[in-house]
Image (cartoon, rainbow, N blue to C red):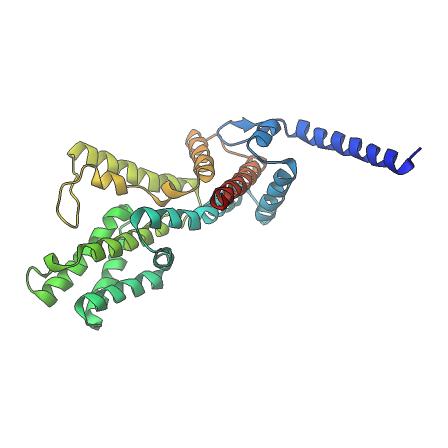
Length: 300
């Protein structure tokens, strides 16, 4: 008799039983909005048990600093928004035809200022402090307009650039501005304000941002306002194409989780720590699956 072989078989059976016990224990993984998933559905989604354990472990590390459910909510919201931010910036830059390096620079206060100053210098061949000051004031005014979504905040900065053009190039100087360059810099400005919008830590704040866009989109539809702001040409649904918060570009796993959180928040049912833990672990696992799929498609 091969004692070693018998012991290996016993260990294998024990490990199988232990794994099955964990699967049974996790058979009903509770999520927000009274939803749940089963362990078998994790496997179907490409999430093995060891990755689920790691997801729970990493989420637990994030929540370990929390003393009450309000802190749990803040950590959850910030964690998910942080996890998906770079991905969203990448998607946004591709959709807008921007260099990713420029888009990443635009996400920081000093970065967007540097891009705007560079734009002014290239257009007007001047680094006048007065022009830079006008742009800085416009950024500050737009940032303080809490009732406006990012898309409309851009208009405040655009107006400042037009004023500078009219002063530098004549009364209709704004009409001579390069449309492609204008579109690019304004897209970068919109990205900056979109990033600011999701610099939040509660579901109520997230719902407020969503409400701003819902109201703006409803107004556009009711007024049939489909004018492209730069060239003046009529393009169907131009505003609607751009009236989205940055979360629109986030991975679907994060968007789904935040949607469940928003619905539960509206129902005022409240969520306990274990459910938030499951949500954070599931998002991590689903993001890992997304990365594997993306890596596999690139290697083919």
